[in-house]
Length: 417
Ligand code: ADP
Ligand code: ASP
Ligand code: MG
Image 1: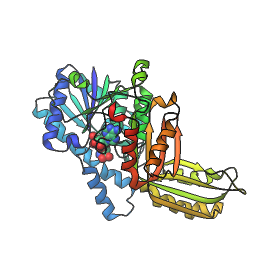
Image 2 (image 1 turned 45 degrees about the vertical axis):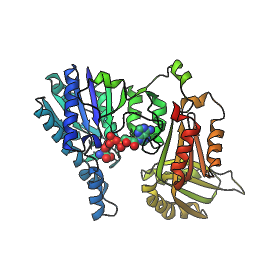
Image 3 (image 1 turned 60 degrees about the vertical axis):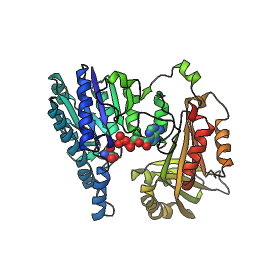
Image 4 (image 1 turned 90 degrees about the vertical axis):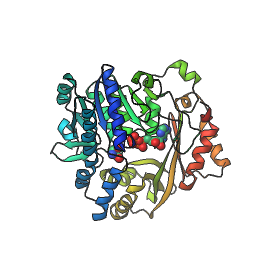
């Protein structure tokens, strides 16, 4: 049986940690598994590389940014492979382009198109542990690409899908998916399982424990995916450890669902910005005229609210990541405003999104009211609201993020699951 294991930055943050990872790979192999390992860069390294680029260019050239950003992972695959060789394990490292992780050409946020698994299979067949660099790929023209921050998760799940692995194990610095970020709320509880739909919403709402695209891959190809801690004893048999961690499930167990809390988790995303386009003509095509050019610039837009029209005019407000704020404002002021003749484009860079997520929302009424009441009791003003079948998101002033997450976590009794 084939197991794909992914180790994040902290898990390979020191040489000793890498040795521990090598021991875990060996323990897994000794259990009779074929092992493919995906690694991130050492913790802090990707930030360091991107900061170097920013010292030279205020807006670094995206193609060159990927050339530099991808080097962190090239270091860790070789070091981990050496650690494996030292343990007497047959092992070999590959970069994303050697394995051929083919992506589109959207530098710094490329999407995986296909993976050529032939070379990996040949190695596995002669008992070699295959170590593949996460986060990186190559486009059809031979350019190096990267998959967006946190992209090694996606490399791992995509490889697990291509290789039809028995399980994709995401090893990180927490021992699973929690009801909220345990760094912010110490009372957060580990979830033994989480449905794919909930995990998708949590990741989309800012829980960076898994990159959202990795969850999309897991769902599309039904890859059994488990989040685990790399900081436990590496020599423990994996099956023992597998009892810990969080398994992403694809079908809701009706028995579990009855016992489960209505809300599974609280997610938050700081570093957001909101943009308002005021007094635009209320006619067909206007949303496209505003958001089309934003999409063309590969800027992701999230919560979108359009007011009810008045006197043939309306306002539109939406959120973007703070890193994209200046670029989005420039596009709107230079290209959109002269064209649609709106009165004003204004923005606020100090907002955050807080979301509650849970399958139970489908069958329980009053969840939104409870959320809004809880925030009102703390005097937190809600600026925007958006919902899906299993998620409610509010946009609030950034300084209230921590308070909002804490009170919601308590109000929905997530410290008791
Ligand atoms: P890695 O380097 O292993 O990829 P990340 O830092 O990307 O690790 O993701 C793990 C971190 O995600 C944890 O340290 C934790 O602070 C954060 N996190 C946010 N939300 C959650 C959550 N709901 N459950 C667990 N961890 C979370
Ligand atoms: N090293 C990359 C990052 O820091 C990819 C990853 O760790 O998943 O975003
Ligand atoms: Mg990560």
